[in-house]
Image (cartoon, rainbow, N blue to C red; front, side):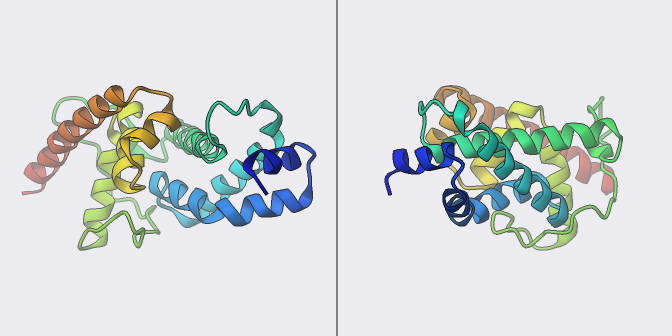
Length: 192
């Protein structure tokens, strides 16, 4: 089945096509969700929302990009929406804006999924610190850094997913790395 035939079947709301969609994308979508929200239960909930959104919105898919790119865009947006909601409820103290050297790293036990293949750190505490620092980045930097460094996407793929130019992605990545150096430097200086 070609991608166009598959999309056509999804638009007809074929249960067979929906099952194929889940088979083809379930692990990829979950891996992206767990990169942004390192808690298995929440990542599974977000992944489920992604598939409902894809199925309900397939009629709006214009075909300007690959279906997979569109699905990653929805996944990224759902993850950011989840983080924003949690942030406003103050559940994530580490998502609040940073003022001066006061880095709001809390020791929450929220992080349940530290075996993510994109996180190659020695222990859970360092992983938690890294995720907190990533989530403290401005949103555009957080998205680019997570998709590139945690999910392993190329700048070109990130460009398609975020609908930004490759040079914008490179610039955001450079700033994200610089900000992470500053954040993590401040954190370890305060811990010493």
